[in-house]
Length: 373
Ligand SMILES: Cc1cc2nc3c(=O)[nH]c(=O)nc-3n(C[C@H](O)[C@H](O)[C@H](O)COP(=O)(O)O)c2cc1C
Image (cartoon, rainbow, N blue to C red; front, side, top):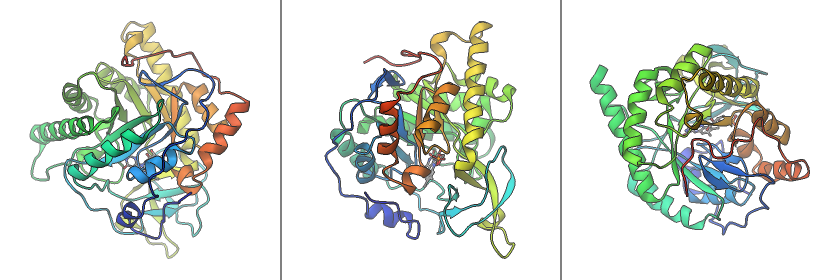
């Protein structure tokens, strides 16, 4: 199986993707699984990032992953940040954004991610989505991650309106191309414009989410969010957006500054999202926080049970035990990026281990906040 070349550019990895394969799926995992109401063969996904195009998607679809999130696309082409895009870091566990972590020469579980959400043109990604969708097996879903491109000349209300419109246009284009659902990226830590931090502003998040909902009718919609540190912030985001969405994926990453050997800060001193091992414990506790918040809101009558979003656990997963930890915390499914890039066989290894010892969930979700059919 092919690995992403961290010494090469993003464009190189796009052009030198694995040759498309016919997907020969591994056996379904015991239990009933669904992604936002669509039945899937397992709760195992690849999160937005590693799946640059059809070649990469089909490689991972044949290697134990059934919820496939197409890397974040835009309504206009956008170049990638310069190399390095992936910088290994030395840190055991991160709780909150803003710390300084040392660079490391070898990857040992966590890295700083610096791409800036590049995208090919909508015409190119739409054609690719169409091709990919036709080659996936039944019980596999193709989710497309989208983001709006901020217009630098706008401010305030006008800027928010433009973001909402662009998110909605992009989501509509992805659905037209054949996506099974949309993941709206409200949480890119590597851009300093409003499109990267929407999840921290519940009222703005609600406005944009409603616009996307109107554009894609009843199709599944997930929000990808970043680190939420307080119960109050989690509650505000759920209350503001749950009427428009089917799920929330968390945690995108935890931002930090990266210091290199000579003491200087990389990336001109700006923060980058740290992904991998170091984020797992914090992300699991964030999933638990959101599950508890939803249950308390239901108990107090402020959220109806059918409005409760599915939770998709992301961050630092590389073993069956990690999958179980997320499910036990209240996730309905999980997604991997880093571990699947470091070891493209990791999905097969996790599946083998889970098939002898099927995962148990915190609660039987059935079809919560899902779509039918
Ligand atoms: C190479 C790479 C590219 C990524 N690109 C995106 C992206 O385009 N959109 C997005 O929402 N998240 C992106 N992410 C974040 C991942 O989806 C995921 O949230 C994060 O890596 C945490 O999971 P992990 O610990 O398994 O890597 C990217 C991550 C990596 C490693």
